[in-house]
Length: 423
Image (cartoon, rainbow, N blue to C red; front, side):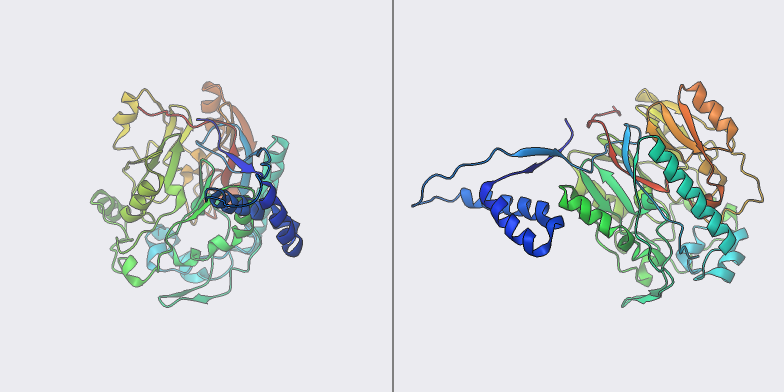
């Protein structure tokens, strides 16, 4: 199946779009024209009793600005998050369940406040350099708008300040020519989509499909308020039993719990993604795409891409500390499973919202180029042995905010076609 293309054209629709565009501004003319074209097409199906035949202009084809089917086709355009104004989320039950006990005093002290100023400045500088390197590699870089995340908001069910727009992978997923907005599961991230709306509206006006998953109320019923965690052993036991802080009260999911391989997407049930959320995605994407649920020996399941990161057709990085329970399924399908080396990040480096395994949270620029942490020399060698060139960037301070290169980005456009890689 070839890449989806957007159509423009139609004489009467063009005239109407021109008039409305003149009133509303040139920026909306394109999508107004397409809307009128659709309306005109429907009207054309009705029988006409009078009037001469009208000439029909030949439609002009234009590539959709949004199109990606997997994690490794040549990257053309990407959204990179922002560290500016990032706030520590309040220490609520869902945040507690996704962080380790050693960091709880940090959340108790700084919850609702800015991350430490010096650390945040370094993170901002690292991400700016990352953007510069992506541009140098020929990738168009887009950014969310700056928002004051300190403002507290209140819904009928809860109150919370915001958090950040650092991790677009968590909230946005591109499947084909469609952008899907995830509903999220943390209250501090309820309004995070606002930072990306100007970009999404732009893509929509240029022909992309735009879907917003059902927004959860995030009422108390969505969370197990007595979720019993203290030690890593507790976490392992609960995860093995399929017990998570999020309930099945309503659908919720973070987009980063899904990873794409053409017609097949893989997802985990985690602290932020429940079965109702997975089922919503399954029905939404069927029948063209198939959703596979996989699981791991993971004491703190949240986001799949530092546990199971697909980097090429039939090629996957699988975290040796969090083995996949269905790994034989991939081996039988002929996939190559690579275990990345132990991360080199020092024990004393603050990782308030993540683990050391962000070393495998890489961004493929294409099948033969990967953006990887400049400090992780052992994983450089691993990629070199796989015949993949490493583009080295340091984002250690940005890691502390909860993500690696894959987390800090959403790939908007990759040059490729829809294929099947899993049989």
